[in-house]
Structure formats: C-alpha cells, structure tokens
Image (cartoon, rainbow, N blue to C red; front, side, top):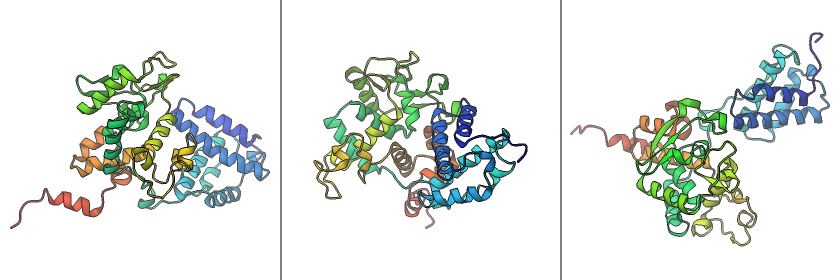
Length: 337
C-alpha cells in the first residue's frame, strides 16, 4: 500500500478512458465507460473515495450487488470490463498488484452466450412487402432492405457512402474508415464487397432520388443514409428497426391485445422498443444469417458475406433447430437403397 498513489474512482475512470481512446472503437469506448461508471457509482454509495483501499472482498460485494440487478450475460460483460479497468489501475499504481485477478467472472453455458431474439423470415418478408407497397424507398424501407439482405452489422451499413454503392453493377463496398468516424468492428479484415439484388438496387436508387438529404458528414463525405444533419446515427438505425418490427406498424393485429392508440410503444416517440414483439438491428442480423443458412447457403459464403467467423456463426447466430439441420443434411446424403 505504501507504493500506491491516491486516486478517486472517478479520476481512475477518466484516465482509463483516455488511455483506451484510439485503441478501441468509439462504440467500445462508450460501452466500457458505461460499465466502469456502474462501479464508480457503487464506490460512491459505499464511501470508497480512494482506489488504493479496494480489496478482493469489496469486488465480491460489488459483484453480488450487480448480480441481483442484471442478467448473467450483462454481469459477465461488466465484470470483464472491470477486470480490464483494474489492470490499468495496477499499471499506474492506483490499486495493489494482482487485484484485477480477484474479479471472479461467471462462466456462461453455451445456451447463455447469445440472445434468442431474432427477426424470423416470414415476419421480415411481411414487413418488406408492406414497405414495398406503402412506404417504398423511404429511409426506413431502405435500412431494413439493406440489413436483411446483407446480414451486415448496423455499423457496416451506416458506413456506406454514395460512392460505395454500385447499383448498376449490383453490389456495395464496405470499407473501414476509422479516421472519419466509420470504423468496422473487425477493422480492415471486415472490408468486403457484397452483392445486392435488383430489388435492393432499385430501392436504393429511388431512395437517393426521392428521400435522401443532399448533405455531407462532418468529414466532407457523402453518406448513403442521411438525416438533415448528416450521416445517420446508430441510434436512429435502432429507432427505425424497433419501429418497423412492431406488428401494428405493418398492418397486423397486436398479438398482445393492445390498442395502438393507447399503447406506450406507439404513443411516445422513441418508445417502440417497449413493444414486446419489436426487435433490434442485431436480431435482424441473426434472422438474416439463419435464413441464409436455412436456404442451404454454404457456411463459408455466409461467414464471408456477414463478416463472422465459423465459431461465432455456430455459437451466436445459427438459430436453426436440430431437426432443421438434420433435414438439410438429409438432402445431401447418398441414396443407400
């Protein structure tokens, strides 16, 4: 303890974030900041004003307090980040050496590692047909068409510029440009060209002609998907997907018997996620990947197109049942009669 230099939890968080800036994406930096902030708040509530005083018992108490409030997967991610934070604190003499290893990370079973939320193909098709008829080439229609057909992450579609989309040739180029605020999750390894259908290309052309705001972003680039302020944000993507995936939005009866005129998911702007049946962009990606696999698209093609490793594909995205997988394999077996 004599070699440690006093540091408050809030000061430690600020130094940690500054140290990580430039090493990780902005999204990761925000996530880490949010998770460490929960620990800072706990320290404040428990009168821990100096990180030097932290003990393994304190960390266990923090873990128990979070365990009672969040899901196991969330607890694991928060404790993973706490361990990274404490290793940084060790390096600047703010906590005793080895304290980070006192954080006991819960082990997740295979079926706990990913969310089961998924946009099923029949729902996706119904929503797209509804949009084709009533909301053709709107920003919402274009977003869902691209997310569903490409199976890409939101960040990949958000990163597209006008010059990246080649509708005459039927493809789009996804590129890693961290210096101008559009990094890809897997960096340059995530760069790829993705084929687009004639329907997607027509939708994009009509969106650009009719609805796209003719603006540049803060770096002088011309984004494909825009608001009047510039490049569309990730939160705006999420808002549109949650909104579109409400059953009542696509002309269906509410399966929960709610009156759309009185439902909080429709009354309040940005409250669409409160609908039990609405889904996030990640669920669209999961559904798209599962759909490709169900249509017998080779694993390698799906892996390359969606920028996901085979291990992650199997663990987190392939939502086919064991029966579905067996029936698909059966189609490729030789005739033993």
